[in-house]
Amino acid sequence: MLKILKYSFYDLIRSRWSYIYLTFYLLLGFVLLFLNNDLSKAVITLLNVVIILVPLIGTLFGVMYYYDSKEFTELLLAQPLKRSSIFLGQYLGVSLSLSLSVLLGLGIPFILYGLLESSAIWNFTLLIVVAVFLTFIFTALSYNIALSNENKIRGFGLSILMWLFLAIIYDGIFLISLMVFDDYPLENLSLVGTLFNPIDLSRILILLQLDISALFGYTGALFKKFFGSTLGFLLSLACLLLWILIPILRIKYISNKKDF
Image (tube, rainbow, N blue to C red; front, side, top):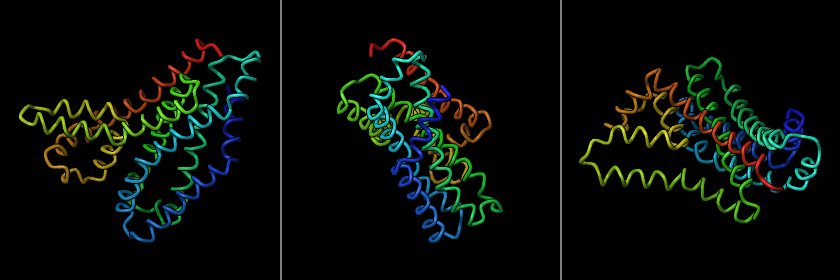
């Protein structure tokens, strides 16, 4: 699997799209730091971009790489290699290359600006960790969709729909439910509903660490009580880890059962 991972990783970091992705974050980081003298404010602004863009790019790259390398994958399947090693190696190569682009693209501007001597280093580190988690999660989800659909157009459509649902539609349904049933105690429902969406969970984790939960009102106080505690923080990271592990296990299962 390591050889497949290395090939996929080096193949992607040489891609022009990886350079575009890296350049975008470099420019974004320098522009935000030029406009904001406060690193904490820059992190908040950056959160609004990262929380939407990182899942979208992970989704697109995951499904694109699977379909574009399909002929090469079929050649590998004819070799004495484990199926799961081939697909997991490709998945990890895509995820690691995208994560490296985010890390370098955001890390270089902030380090040059003096992040290592700032009190905002923990908030920025958490933002990078969340971005890496979201990259691995949505790359795995889109890879699952592509692996389950031979039709390229259908695979792309379902992947974009999946991202759209988790990034936008889910929040709308969730808020409407809270408004309709506002006469009932919905504290536990709010917490559970947040855990079932990695984007919402990542956003709340960062906002609470920035200590602006007072702006959320009663809901913010509830989230601060749970997610702000050490147990809540660890449980949140465990949920994000499950969002990675479950799709990976499904990739392994489908690759071993699928008739290529």
